[in-house]
Length: 175
Image (cartoon, rainbow, N blue to C red; front, top):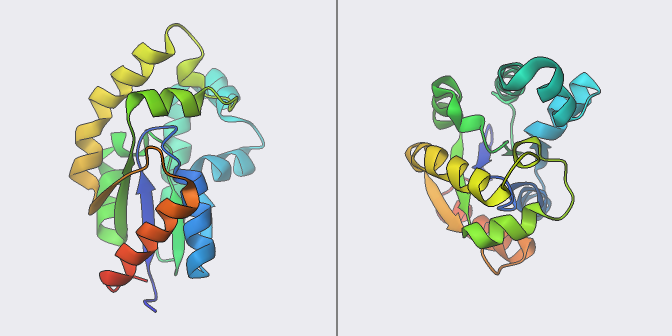
């Protein structure tokens, strides 16, 4: 098994980065970290509260700090927030430090998954479909630019996607 390996899961909210990441880490016997969960743990505040008090810039700064803190860790799956790719420094750090997997889904699947009650500040005001579509248009090129591999998650359960991803990583000598 490879050591000093980081696998970053990137993609829009609602594609299953956390669920798939947890399953993948379990399959591989690796550790798992969700950057949004780590920001919450470090601050003691939920993402909505951070956005309210510090704005998006404050949250993005905290998110980048979490990303920098994982560099050099071994055998770690990192589920990133959907906006992690917005900062060029974050994209470069992920590309140079690990293997980057872009998880993607249809807009309808993304909408269905984000309706399931998680606190998502970007979707709370106005039209969630328009918000998701706008984020997708702005971020999709950044996901593609950053990723080593892209995997569709529509109509697939997290365990099946994680198994597929594990097989891919093993075929590349990463896991």
